[in-house]
Image (cartoon, rainbow, N blue to C red; front, side, top):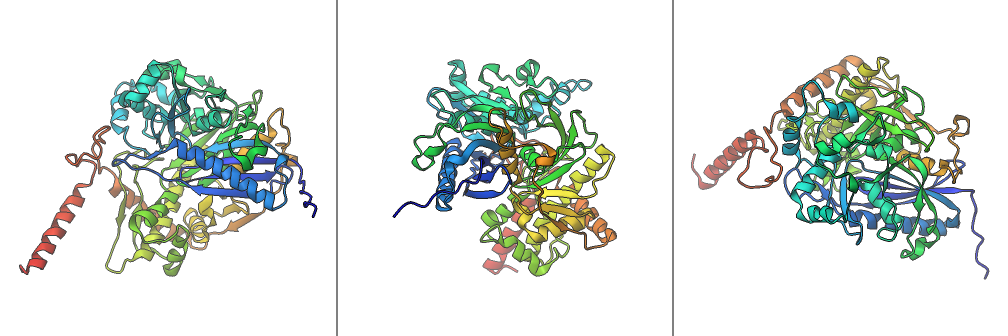
Length: 560
């Protein structure tokens, strides 16, 4: 029997979407932006000490190979010719820091994830060396000195990991954020792999001058980072190299396909939401929550705790565009915490069902400051709290409070954005995995008092990477001209409570935020996890625990 003829849908574009919690590979039709197939693999996070968050770079890379292979299998089952894939883009978790050996391709240390807090001591030491009247770090990078960004993570690794120090001395070490690690590996690794990053990812390292678009000598000297280990800086849309993955038999047809798009995940979502005009904004709900507003070719600095960052540069000869960004560390991660740490959920999706059964937090407020507070506070001393508990409170109320926390945090960064921009947003464009939760989306509209608008295809991060790859010079299968961009179907959530009630709930949340601050007086950088160090755990925890143990012991022993 003759084999079925494979369907040809016109040029296709693939996108690697490498996030903190999972990796995906998605394939789009470049003419319609239709998502044809995808595969997802959840990733492990390691917490070797309190405040430390790591991932295995080899596991990240393997997850990419697996997703590519499984997606190609699914396309074949759909009778779609995978040789129609003409380009591949990469979108990635930003700031996460990887150092590897350029001769063997082996990571020299685990990836230090953007959420990691081990560098708090480093930040405190470095901040004392910045003149009060000349914050050259912020003026050059648009970023506050924080544990969040790559430079302090890399500084810590270079100081504390002997294996890395030795590799740097022997000129074997390469540094990169996750995009650099993936592009280098996918284009050959030790056998000619391309060591590069794009301007959006470079702008999150705190080593990159966002005005000159180059690695900055003064910043590298300040953080004691040798410039020889840094990747080459490229635009977000150009051919970096060709895929070399012949060891993966099922995906062999992708051998030689150009890798031609690269954007940090939040910039990719901005492109995927088609926010190409000044003042257009989007909010992505992933592990964290990130609100970006396009400020065009103007570099706008915030007076209200937001970051200034590179939005995109869609071609070598194209202008760079900037954005204001509000960053929230914990969004989807709070649901994962309820599942993995408290065990009150069997799956992340169950949070919607639990919250829906009560429809209120019943006065319970949750501030998930697991990694301190990011925008607009930038308060590393904060820690997570759940307050307003009564004997009536149960897991349903806590689940509802967790979803409300995501919405309240978004309200805080939206308020800051409105103050900086001067023109309040009339609606909020949203995307990301959590937007499938209808309770969350309705809560968000209620708390913001403006409509929330969600695309019917929420994978806008991957779509943005695919658009950049397909539009690259030498590929040219995806037009970014406004008249050629596909119309996207939207779902709209209107506020359903009065503004007064919303303001009361928000004011109570702000009160809870104040209670979360000041738990730590200084985060130890190398002794975290030492049983002799208690400063990073709330004192109240020890008092309450001691009282409970004492009362329990007296009860068991029969002492009145």
